[in-house]
Image (cartoon, rainbow, N blue to C red; front, side, top):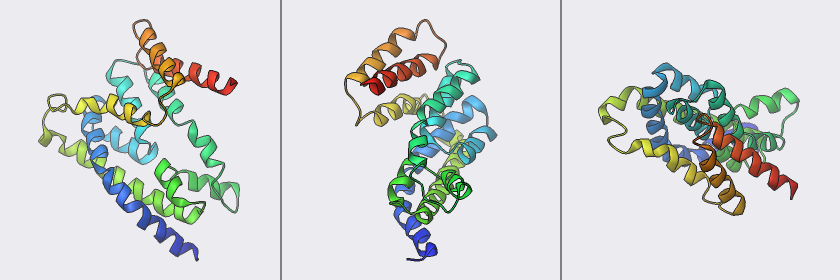
Length: 205
């Protein structure tokens, strides 16, 4: 199969997933606009391009955390991409690095080991996510107050969803540790510390 048709196949495979993720992007844009303004959420979607990390960053800033804590929380959520990027094929290190700019969980899954499919899938997801963010940022006023509609629950709900397949002793330990540390550490740090402790315990097993 030629690279062009593989890229098109990546677009085809990713399109339904990207469409399904549009409401999440709209909610992110609407919530983030009230915390970091109008331009920053769109810039984050184009550059960071990671729903979990973007939600974490805005959540920490919303709760009064420092920019450093927000960035550390986002980095902790994206550590998994270090391992995933090692499996991305390419003719050179630069080709692999360029492909990794479009790496997401869904794009990596549908790529099935093909760099061209990854590029097609990742580009599709990036466009859909960024456009959804723009709609949320500039159309959020039409929705009204996100908190009044309960959309602010999207922050904790997202992380519960991310944990759905990983609930176990370590996840419960991390949750308990974060709960204990919340009154004594700055926003964002309890989750980061709990994640590092749970990760260290898991790696030592």
